Length: 121
Image (cartoon, rainbow, N blue to C red; front, top):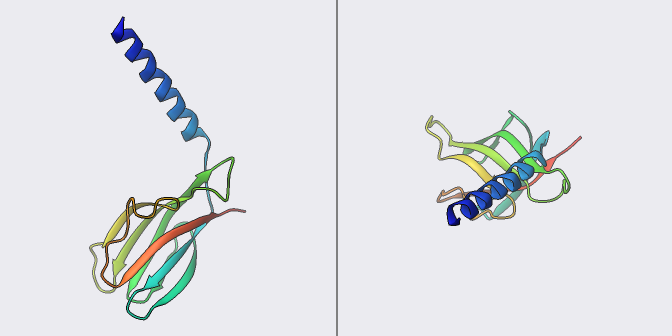
């Protein structure tokens, strides 16, 4: 009986997760904010999916940006690859979440980058 209840809860949870996945939309690009800690400069960077931008001595490549279908201005998350100039190995590669930038941050002594929102048509 307990096993059946646990199975029912797991199935209900997977149904909720499936509904959440269906309500996510890919944006055309993203708006990121970059901070140079040494010079105390802040820039907003607008990228299209697949594009790259150079910010100081790092290059940022946007893989894709996703956002909740019901709330385009809401919690965006973007897949980023960030490399230092002249170095092939990325210093960051993964998803950044606008609502929780500290969850998976760029760990760099000079630069900080975070997601603000996705861009839509």
